[in-house]
Length: 190
Image (tube, rainbow, N blue to C red):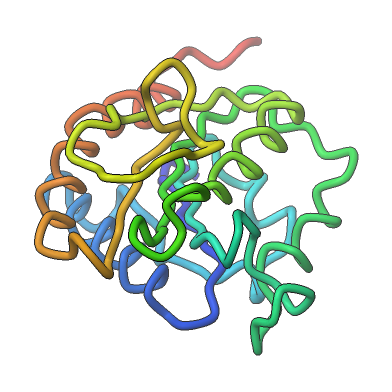
């Protein structure tokens, strides 16, 4: 399969909305066949993710830096319930870009922290993570999802800065799309 897979965990639907915006922007640039339909992880398996060499994964941050899931008061299963399926799975050769949602005003010391949970897990599983963005233009105090002055993925605040979302997605895709598509151009070992 020569597509980019998009998977997300959500409860309120905002992360799903962003996943669909990202898919639509990719289709506008490269056509229908380049990206798969975004899928909630509560409807996916580890094998679904492993079917792709390039992935975009999204998560909101719940409360004080938490991933969505029933243990963190979401109504639906999400990342917390999905992640145990990944135990022992090898994502070597997979390139992953992350996006995360947070609230700078309500949780300024945990802004987009949940992205770091995914970053750590998939890095340990052998994946190559790409697509971090600069922290400029954001007003938060601290985030675990920042390394060397850059978020580990696309950070978005739909509460405070929703008018910046489309431009941030476009700028992020300028950087990340060539890196994700590049994995399909590499020669397959004999």
